[in-house]
Amino acid sequence: MFRLKRLEMAEWACDHCGDSKSKLNVHHRYYIAGRHPWEYPRQSTLVLCDTCHWLEHESDLRKPDDCFCLWEYAATIWMQKDIDEKREQIGSTKDVR
Image (cartoon, rainbow, N blue to C red; front, top):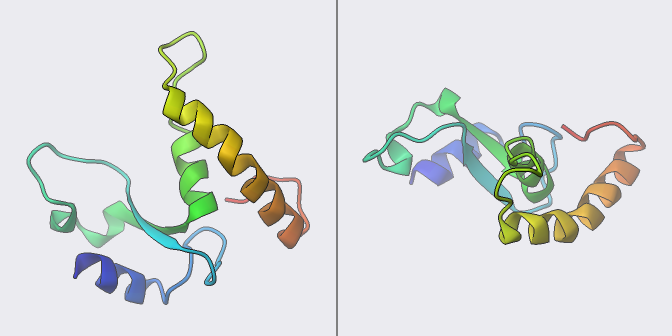
């Protein structure tokens, strides 16, 4: 129910790039132990397409000298194509956020 309400509030479009055709995610900016995903204020969440959601998490990636999760590395490779396509769609080499 929370997800549906949040998507409706965002008018079924990504808060960063406005994409309304891709899968949308409700991204939590932070988590509090013991709290359910729907127990957060609206302003603590973002509606993001898959590409912008990945970019949001990319900014949180550990530095290479830290323990780098294999999943994060695989996601980096897998999502690069989508990022390049989105940049091409908007005609920019800048960050798509």
